[in-house]
Image (tube, rainbow, N blue to C red; front, side, top):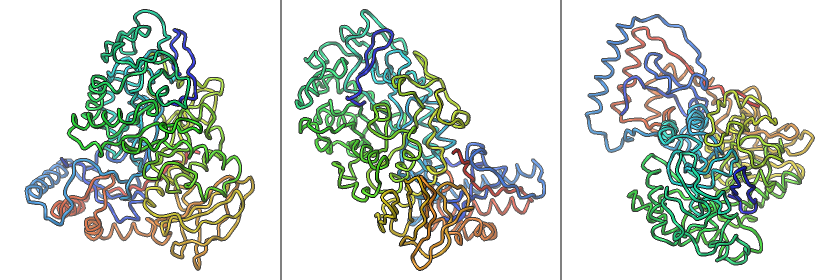
Length: 635
C-alpha cells in the first residue's frame, strides 16, 4: 500500500488512504521439452494434464483398438507399476515426488512472479492452469484474503475487519481450491497480508458489517472478528504527520486507519494464527503490506511466532516487505533495516525504468548501482497497482515503453522479478475496482474473453502475462537464471543490446525508427529462432564468427535464446525421439529433467515400466498423439 496515495472516501464515509495409472507421460530431450513436444497415449492422459487450448494436438492416424483390449492393457500396466513401486529406490535414482518441482516445462527453475491484482480465487486458479503453469511462472501474489469492509473500490481490500478467509475475492473453499489447483501445475501462491492496521477511524458511526457479515465498530476500534479492542492499538490517535520521525510513522495512523500495536504479544498471536492457517492450506509466502509502518523487530517476532506454529524455520518462510524508500525520511525507515526478515520491495527500480524508457535507455548499463537494495534482497518490478495509479512508474497505457521495460527486466538479472496483471482504468477512476467488482464480491473473469480486448474504458483486463513477447521473456529469464550480464553494447541512446553469458542475447530498440546493427555475442555460431514476438521459427537470427546481425523494428526487440538454435529445434528432433523412446527416456532420467507437469522422473524401474507400457499399447495399435505447444499470440 503506497503511503503517498491518500485514500478517497466511499459512499458510507469509509476512508482508505500417488502417481496413478492414466497419467503417464514420456517426454523427449531438453530441446523438445522447451518446444512443448511430448508423446502420450491418448487413452492414458487426463484432460487436466495438458489443456487442449494450450497444446493443440497433431494426430497421427493409427489402427483402432477396442475398449476391452485397452482395459486389459491398462490393468497390465497398473500391475507392473505396482510391482515396480514396491521395490526400493536405488540410491542414485531421483526419488518419486507427488508434488511438482518449481521448474518449467524445459526443466529450468521458475524465477518470475505475477501480481494478480483484485482477481478472484476461481479466476486465478483457471489462469494457473491455462497460462501461469504452462509458461513457467513461479509464484502468483494475490490481493489480501482477509474479510474487509464493503465497497467496490480496490483499496477496500486493505481495510480488514477479521482474518476470515471469506473475502470479496471468494470463499474459504474457493481459496483452498485455488492454492491446490495452482500448486498442481507448479505455481505457488503468495498472499498479500495486512497487519499494520484495521479500518479507517473516521468511518460511519455504529455497528457495521464486513463482506462476510462480521460486525465491527470503526469509531471505537472494536473488531470482535479478530478479536481486537482499543487496547490493541498504538496510543497515537492522529494521522502520520512527520516522515522524519520513525516513531510517528510506525505508531500513528495511516490515512486514519487504526494502527495495530504489533509489539503486543496478543496481536502477534492472532496474526501468526492467520499465517499458520494460510500455511496449512499450502500458501508459500507472504507480502507484508505497509511494512515500513511496522517496527522491524515486531515483524521478526511475528515471523518467528508463525514459524513455531507451522514447524518451519523462520528463514525458510518467503517474506516480502513493502518498504517505500523516499528521500528525506528518517534513517530507521530505510530498506536496510528490514533485510534481517526477508526481501524488500525496490520501488526505485520502477522509477529508474520509467525515466529511462521515457528518455534514453543507454544508461541502464549501470542500473544496479542506482539501487539501494542488494540484488539478493530486492523484490523488483516495473510497476505495481499503487504506482500505476499515482504515476510514479510506467503503466500499460504507455504502450511500447511499458512493454520494453518489462522486456529489459526479464532479460536482466537484478532481484526477484514480478509482473503486474491488472485491469484498465481511467486516470479519473483510479480508486475504482475492476468492472466485475461489487460491494461484497468480485465476480470471476473469463480471461479467454477478457484478454481479447485492447486497452479501453470498459474495464477490460491488462493480460500482460498472455503477450507472446512476455511468454518468451519469462522462458528466457528462467533459462538464463544465474548467468551474468555480458557483451553490453549500444547502437544509439535508445538501442541497447546485451547477453547472459552463453545463454542468449537481446536487442532492445526504444526509438521510433528501426535499427540494423552488428553485435558481438557469446553464443555458438548458427541460425536461431527469434522467439520474441513469434511462437514458431518463422523469424530467424544468424550468428557468424561470434557476430549477430539484427534488424530490430521500431519500439520492439529481438531475442536470441541459446536453446532455440534452429539445428537443435524440436522439428528436427521429433522424428529421432519418436524412433527411440527408450533412448530419450533414459537420457531424461540421467539428466534429472522434469516432466511436462513439472514432476520428477521416478526410479529406473518405473521408467522401464513406462516404456514397456508404451510398447504394449503400440503393439496393440493404440493411437498416439504428438502434441506441440504453439502459444497463441495475444498481441
